[in-house]
Each structure stands twice: as structure tokens, then as C-alpha cells.
Image 1 (cartoon, rainbow, N blue to C red):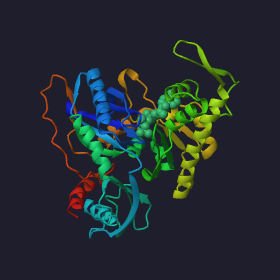
Image 2: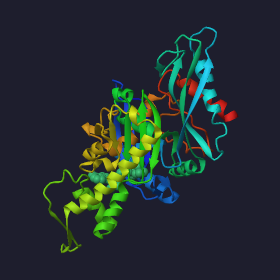
Image 3: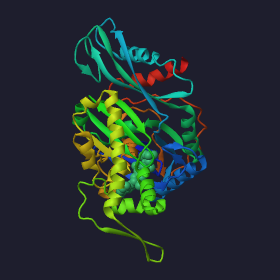
Image 4: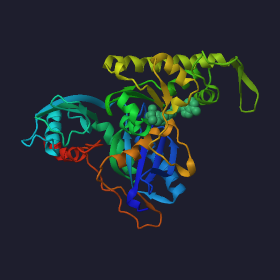
Length: 433
Ligand SMILES: Nc1ncnc2c1ncn2[C@@H]1O[C@H](COP(=O)(O)OP(=O)(O)OP(=O)(O)O)[C@@H](O)[C@H]1O
Ligand SMILES: [Mg+2]
């Protein structure tokens, strides 16, 4: 397998940094060849607040994966998340060229026009993605790819993802100090969508909720494209703090209680039992009923789901979610969470496993916590990202030069159909504005 076929994803989460090296097998399926992770404590609510700690966590995760697979990692594709990321919708309408058949240059003009609407974007923000949502040629049906269609006018909408330059610069600093080059920044919800949504769900309208340690990230996909996203600053670590407060124990004990005995739906909890907390010497310190723990967890989880439901309702997309809800992130591992979500949303709910990755290491099944990082590597192959893919080489391969320091560059990507090349071309145009 040529090394240029490898992709590396890095998810710098609030509680965990995870890294995946994957390649395409001979059948074109994405195969994981190594994974690594480390404890992360340099972020608050998915935003870097301590460069040294974050850089150290990245180094540890990278060393983990390098050791596991005898590889040297040179570069990574990084997930971007947090409340500083904003999304906006822009519309556009153009006349189709004289041949009356939509070509790439029409799509280019269409996207240019859509982006003009955000020309007055605050100088503190950087464009991360320009994602066409739908094209309507004359009065025909909505399309994801209009190239080759006949008509006179084309209208439609575009989803533009921007992030605060300073926050993005912090991420770049951490990654580059770890000696790694950044191939692409990918909005976390875009990566999640690629990892967990089945084609039929995307068309039917689906809500993806990633319940991480520090943030809950929400995205709605309709007719194959992302239409709405939101970051909610309440997540699974808040449940731990609630337990610590309610039971009067340290956060570490609360975390253990949550993982070992946690249940998030009081309707489903079985016969009550006492939970006994012991001190270091094995003496019992405290006893309390398991139902109290369930009540604490249910209250916070209910709040998270209600915040999500209200936000999506305000967005106007709630009625378009016909294919249900997908839960990812570590919070999705809490027992009873699917049942509780069904109650709040009144929709089908399932846990999102990263199905975009068909073959793991010796058949390993990856879980909802791995969805973002798996989506990152899948995204590299889905997009026509033209940069260097050889981000992981064999340990005895000739060493690569250290990466050049990278200035604030504009990253415009998220191509998935024939207009992909057009989006790449827009980068120069946008930079000149
Ligand atoms: N088995 C489990 N049961 C319940 N909760 C769990 C379990 N495993 C992990 N968690 C919780 O999931 C959270 C971490 O999830 P995840 O790894 O998705 O977050 P993150 O990516 O580090 O954070 P964020 O996405 O917010 O930046 C923690 O609060 C952790 O306690
Ligand atoms: Mg996460």
C-alpha cells in the first residue's frame, strides 16, 4: 500500500485527544491501521485555554499511535469545534451560460455570489467551509450536483462555516509545536455527518447530537447536506460535577460512579440498590441509593436534550427531521440515554457508530466517542483535498523536513460532488477580496 494513501485524523477534545491513521484497502474501503489517545486537560468547553497542556496531550497521543504501528506521523487533519465556530446560510442566483447547460464556471459564479453576502464578515473570523446545500435549476427539483443540467437560471443556498482566527491560531500552534503539519481543518459536525449518517438518513433529515465532555454539538442534515448546527455549553462533564455536588464526592469518584452505575432514565431503572463508596483502605465511607444517582443524571441529560430540542425548533428545521436522531460522543455511552432522547424528541433515536470506517484493526468496533476522528479520515478521502496525504510513513522511511510555520491561511473545503474543484478555486478569489 503506498504511504501516500494514508490519512491521519486528530480530534482535540475537552477530555481526550484521539488520533487515527487510516488507509483505503484494495476494495476502496477505509481501514484503520492505528489509533492513539491521551488525556486532555488544556481545553475548556472544546476551546484551547492552555497551549502547553494541549500540545503535551497531542504529543502523547501521537507517540501512542507511532509506537503502536511503527509509524512516523508528519501531519494531521484536525477537527474544529467549540462555541467560536459560527455558521450562516447564504443564497445565490445566477443566469446559466449561453449553452444552457450548467458547467463548473456557473457553479463558481454561484458560490462567489453567495460568498459576497458575507464579505463584511468580521475580520476576526476565518472561513472554514463553503458547503453548497442545494441548487435549483429553473423550477426543477433541488439538486446537490447541478453540473450538466439544462436551464436558464440557477438559484440555491450555501452553508458557510467560520471560526475565530485567534482560537484557530491556538489550535495550529499546539499542533505545529508537536512537530506536525495541518492538512485541513474540518468542522466537527461535518466529520460526524460523514462518519455516522447512512445515505437514506441524510436524505430523510437527521439530527446528530455529539455529547462530549465539555460541549454538546448539534447538527441537522437534510437532503444530503448540513443545514443547521449549534454548540451547547452543557455536556457530560456537567453530569460528573452534578454527581460530585449531589453525593458530595471528588470529581474522580463522581466520574467513576457515572461510568460504573450511571443510568439516565428513571423510568427504566430496575429495583433500587445501595451504592457503597469505599475509601483507599477499602472501608465503607458513604452509602446512598442508586435511584438518587439516576435522578441526578436524568435531570442533567434531560436539560441537554431539551436545550437541543428548543434550539432546533427555533431554527425551523425540527419538522424536517424524519429519519430520527443519532447520538455520538462519550455521553452517548450512558445507559438509558436513547430511551430518554426518544421521550424528549418524540423521534427514532440510535447510537452513532462510525460506519464510514468499514474495517478496524482486527475487527475492532469503534464507538460513538470515536465518531469525530473517524469522520476526519473519511473526509480526506471523500473530498478532493489536494494537499499532502503522506502524513504517516514507516518508521525507517527517510525523515521528512520539519513543517514550515504556517500563517493564518484560509481553508475552504467540503467538496463531495462534482463542484468540488470549483470550491478549491474559490480560495484564491476569496483571498484577493
Ligand atoms: N462508558 C461511559 N459512560 C458514561 N459516560 C462516559 C463513558 N465514557 C465516557 N463518558 C463521558 O463522556 C465524556 C467524554 O466524551 P468525549 O470523549 O466524546 O468528549 P471530548 O471529545 O473529550 O469532549 P468535547 O467533544 O466536548 O470537546 C466524559 O464526560 C466522560 O465521562
Ligand atoms: Mg469530542
